[in-house]
Image (cartoon, rainbow, N blue to C red; front, side, top):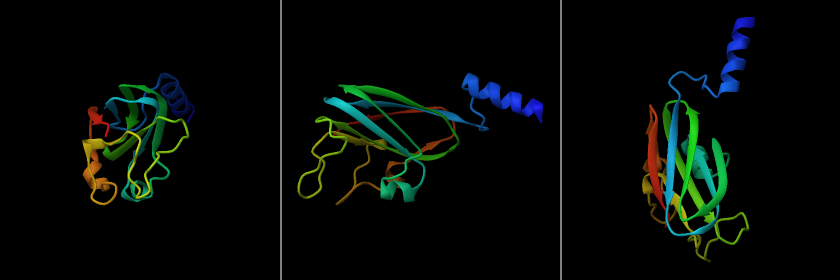
Length: 137
């Protein structure tokens, strides 16, 4: 038992993922914009539909490009949404009919009809290290 605790502690300190087959997902966000970027990674249809409780999230300063890496993900399907908060109100601003007025992007550059795309349309299958590019709209 002590040996297992040592291995877990060493792995945590060194950044080694403990999940068998864990992989990293590298994301490049491209497009002309400036502001704060918010990214949310989802691993289920239910969370994606609600756009709440992402598996992981990240934010940073966006200036015409941004890179991020989600490390140590177990194999599976993931969808990512990003937006650039140009006016620093921590919200994706929308017009009166609900269309975003700030730059945003979805994994696989998926597009929805009369609303956001489905999880299946945006999902990336991850079984080993992968990378993708999201173009802002």
